Length: 265
Image (cartoon, rainbow, N blue to C red; front, side, top):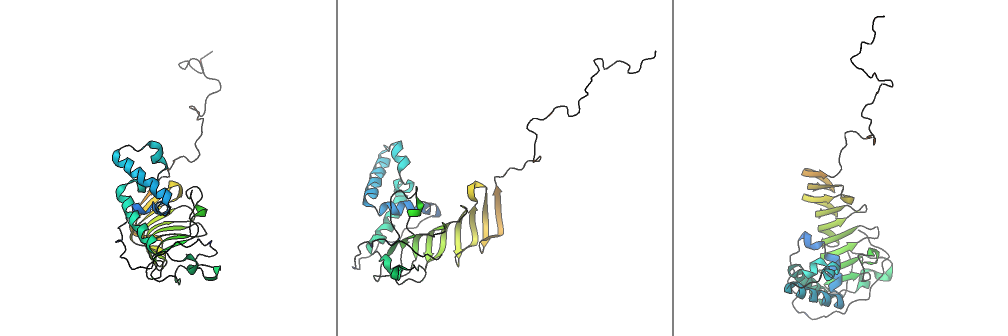
């Protein structure tokens, strides 16, 4: 997942004290489906405050339908929002300088970066903008955690070719999470050396054309699994839209079917 020629964001302010960070929350794969929108929102003070008000409305049972329609779903759910609030609190504690991931501005290295300052805990590589769902090309190329100077922990990595990974990384490589391919298909599960791999994974084909659940090896279905297809098979591939009830009619039908066809003279 090489990333080059990225726009560098201004670094967030960082604090060099050694205050203990909040314990990392446990995210399910379902929680990760909201990662980009939830993290981007909570890094924006206005968006975070807006959703805090929505959670209050949800608790009181007074959330208006139009507010629900415009909200990040996970951030109006108290349990899911609590996980992301912990994550963003850790990220805000000591942000890395994004320029340290792209020395000289000629390219970015997320596998073996030299991130600074020491003990920084998060990286936002690219510009944070509003309206990311409407224009995903404006999304950051990486936003997420950093551990021991490496892109490790929970994060979202978006490549220039349009592929996108959200989940847990180790040294810039996906470990477990959701990966969107170029054709729009989605894999959810475990990874090894950057490829889908594990005893169980889920592939969803683009446009809902099919689904696979089962073992995966080097990015391919392997071992036990179940395939579900939404393509309906038609026994007649070229049906006549206006079928004729009598394919061989007699042009001169006999009005009396019981009449002797050859009477004696």
